[in-house]
Image (cartoon, rainbow, N blue to C red):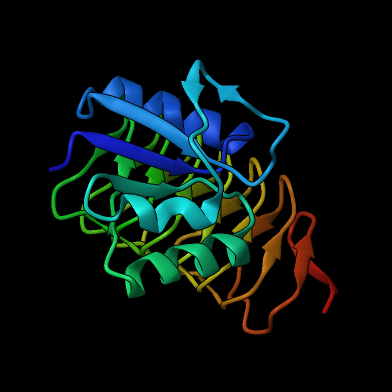
Length: 207
C-alpha cells in the first residue's frame, strides 16, 4: 500500500469521500485533483492539480474517483485502470459488511451502510449514507445507491443505474442497466427497460 491517496473530484461527493479516507487512517497524505481552478482546498486538503495530472503520480499514490455522475466516474476510472494506476475502494469504519460480501475497486461505502452476507457490489459504485443491501444482492458496476435506500434480499441492479434517495426495492426484483429510480419510489416488480421510474408502486415516466 502506498502512503498517499489522491481523490479525483473535490466537490460535495469528494468531501464525503475524503472524510471516509481520513477516518480509515490508512494514508499519511491525502490530496485532490480537480479541473475547477477556483477551488484551492477542500476539507482542509490541498488540490495539487487537474484530473489529467493523475498520471504524474502513477508510482507515488493510490487513487479514488469521487465523481457523482455515473458515466463520468466510469470514464475516468476506466482510464486509470487501463493505465494501471492503483484504484482503491473506501469503506467508512461505521459500515457493517456481512460475511462473503465482495466490493469492487473504486467503490465508496458511506457511513451507516449495511451490506448483508453474500452480496456482490461491482467496481466504481456509490453505496451512500445509511442505505442497506440485504443478502445475495448483485449490484453491477458504476451504480449509485442513494442515501436511505432499502434493498431486500436477492435483488439485482444493472450497470450505471441510479437509485434515488429513500427508495425501496422488494425482494427477488431485477432492475436492468441504465435506469433512474426516483426519490421514494417503491419497486415491486422487475424493471426490464431502461428509463426513469417514479411513484408507489414505481412506473416508467421517461424512456
